[in-house]
Length: 161
Image 1 (cartoon, rainbow, N blue to C red):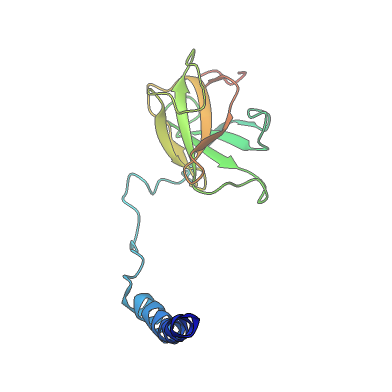
Image 2 (cartoon, one colour):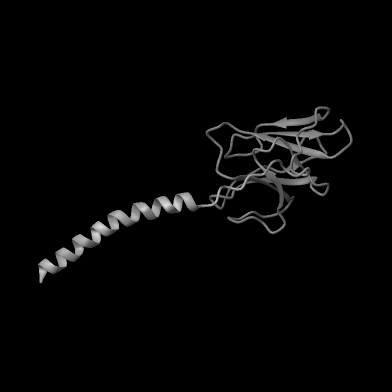
């Protein structure tokens, strides 16, 4: 009784030992290539304009994260705002996104419904919507599905706050 089972098990292992590596190699060869874009759409490829004026630069907006935030504007007193963020290499989280939330919005473990996506943390400049003048920034890791940090309240049109 034991010998026929051992013989069947031995034959099964030989077949699997040949079949699995072959199936793995075929799967690797047959998979689709990763999608590649030639360039970003014009609305996403915004960088800090060379003639942009630096409104303010702050390092202490986030309590948990050593993030440096810069606020740019087309001209010193006019034009749309843009944010640029920088952090040390050891801080960066996977798929880090930046959101804006209006003032007096409570933040729990999930993103608030009224959060506005500004873009990826690594982008050279994140355009700020016109309605975003008073509120906070949220750093959200898409890969970990968690809020990394929430900034102190920020008022964009007031350089002292």
